[in-house]
Length: 580
Image (cartoon, rainbow, N blue to C red; front, side, top):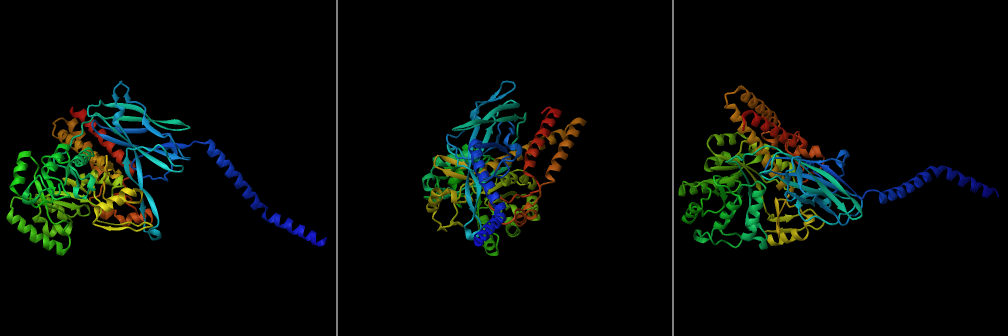
């Protein structure tokens, strides 16, 4: 009996010791049941609005007022302007549909057709990091695809990319409409879309070019056709490109209608690029072919009124050996063809040794602020610049690089590698490491069959069978080009107002000039040194994935749209002052 009493006392003591834990466990179990019940009764998804410059991914969650915000777009006639609609799912959704409820209508009854609103969804790829022996990845937004999904997975955020194409003859004013999101078994959610059209005619600088390096030899076999290349050129021009490289395409003896197996005929390529607006009269065109000095090419150029052709010779001569080879070759080329103009991508070291032998400099962006570039400009060299930093998934960088940085750097051309390019060899940090060298078709097959696991590092557009799909960087580039055009338009008005005699016009010009000076005081002449990747790694903490580096990071993402709106207001004010 004593023994049983001892056992009871012991059990009572143990229960008293652990009862708080039992209470906590019971409470947690109740919370699980409660949360499960709340989830079943709660919304299936949340629709929200955010600034398209803010990088998001599958794990991004809406913040505060984003859930109820209105989508607001500001643009000039003829301009494409994007905005973003986010959807955060709590459960799997079926029967999903996203569309615009009719047309956009102004207070005066004018309309912008709903067909001018393009709806896409951002698809993502895995970026494999250096951590965990290549077994860890993060999601990165990549392509804006027009094939909208009918099902959405639970616990993810989906980004719908909305682009308004304002007609060139659209009247100024505010246009409104509704973006609709619906799914089976859930009430439709409407988000107001407000489009303000400014009374502005954007001007295009006649000598400035935005170009892509493009080599049709790097396309998949089934898409290496003139018909598909016309789609490539049309898309490039639609996204602001007005210059593009013309590689190869000239057969033995300088024939223009035959070529090697991986290229396309030179005459057709040039004429198709011109017809699409992917190259522009008055701006020279880079070509790799050393046979552009033949009579056949000279006759064709005269017949079709082609732009001047530049011989691209000795790519990126930066070390002593390549500089020596380039110097010898360029001297021979110039001797044989004194009128021929040469071009290459080149850095500061290459320019110091070879600058006088090249007529057009495509300066690496990290060297653009060096004194040697200013010296070349003083000598009459045509100065372009380029970047090949694998930034196709980076919207803010591409907007910055094509726009305000190009204006600050005073270049006449802005280039990127590349429009479409599969890398020569492929080593992807992933559970199964794949190594392929120089086999384009094997690489394309790998990318096509398993797109989620690869970074499209040099494809600013993805060559899908039915047409090119833009990357977010490609879209960002168009926004940067528009930024440049806004600045150029304002500068033309400032010059015009400054030349007037009326004090009111001159004062207005000074005010707008001060506005531009304050804006560009924020832009570094060489952000690659002042705000480089090393600092970004420290700022972000750890591994930096593609698109993480933002030059001049003191310029906030919200600043870009404030700058654009401020420039537009200055343009409108000056137009009223001088009647233009």
